[in-house]
Length: 322
Image 1 (cartoon, rainbow, N blue to C red):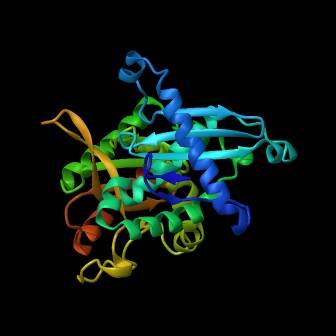
Image 2: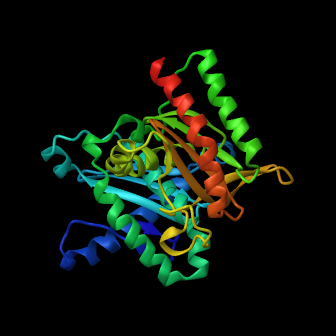
Image 3: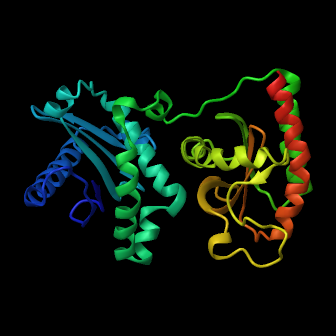
């Protein structure tokens, strides 16, 4: 359930019930959610308000169901879920509400990663906003197998690979030299297999990016990677143009993916959400994600390929031998 705040429209509602009862559930659940948040707000002290978490939340258990709600974007939007106790018992699934809260938070952050904040999207085109919610969450939610979800997903975390001092310094040096060689690169994330080695992105964005890379992009590219490595030990870009030898613009199917991640604003001393282009380069078992707000050309990608093709494979081999 994704609501635009109290008294505002409901933008997305997912249920496994028939259309006949869906409208009734729609009204019942959203009304209950707003009542819960309004009622519990009366018991929140000024100190609690000052120390409120990134996403204020409410958890409620009734005789028939468990409810979890989070408020996002200055409490302008309400995201919630209701879990049937009967169905949970039949599936032998024990509900831990704080974990479900993290799942809701992760779902929102995953949408924000690719499409930006709800409020900005809604202001541009409310109908398209509703359609995008349907498109994204209609596909994303069925993938959430709560009873089989990895612990890291419940905790909204990322797995790190412990390295010895010299090896870690080589990873940091690779990142520093890459940015120095190509100043257009503003942020970097480096992984080995499905573990984080180094990152310069905001910690707020790391779990969402980590999950996208390790559970979606990298598994999808394994088949192509095995075929590619049988012919070459050189690295390659996982997204974007298949042919970087040309000099045509990166448009259409050749366009790079974009993500919305936080950037520190020194003047205002806070973090703001910024749209970046993302280049993902992989050699052996190592992956480098590069983020930039500037124009990216095939020539730039050729130069990065020439640099990382040798340097990244050296680091990957060293880690593999460690």
